[in-house]
Length: 271
Image (cartoon, rainbow, N blue to C red; front, top):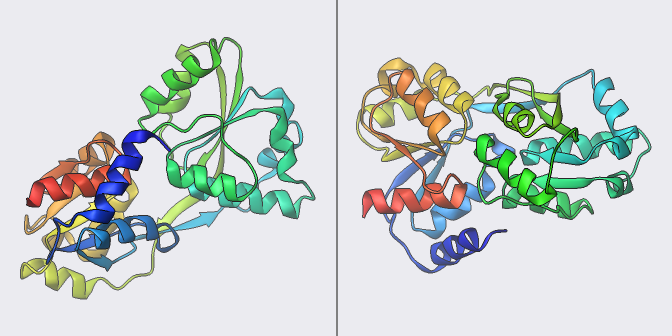
């Protein structure tokens, strides 16, 4: 965990700033805990409204082949806790152990992903504070000295952006993205939330990926989504751009592009 993230988390546990604010969390239910705790630590009422769920892919033969030949890779990059859980669950099913990662270096995007890895017995060698794909490639290059001809394994979502792979290729690396799950709409009835939005009972809605924006709009309806009655708090520029393209108003981007940064940005906004 980076020093900046630690400082933000320490401040969040000791200072308010969101008292009386009702803030919606749209992350998948199994991912929502970190953001909910951070918001509540600041005095907000976190309104759980998961709009996505994580569905592991059925055919993971490519992942199994990569894991059994992991020594051929310079790095394995885990971009979310979702990929950690799916990969390590399959390790057990295939009769493998976390020791297979002893032959390669592991990078984790964000402190939550790093913690998930550590709990499984793998300590990442690189943990960037924030996930901006273009800068992550630079961080891997600095850590390695050179990425020329380096094979890099990236377990990912089936709809993930290819910006990370493209950035690594610019450094001469050979990235291999292997889809391990897909994001699908959650079966959540958000008609009550739509009414709360329309009458002004929601202060902000948080979005941590472009898919959360798209499925939120589908589930609450366009009228509520583009009403301008709430702050659309996005975790970074890609998610923010999606929100604007789909017509959401009052879009805010977190700085830095992390969950703690998202909460800090909300505090500054409502100060």
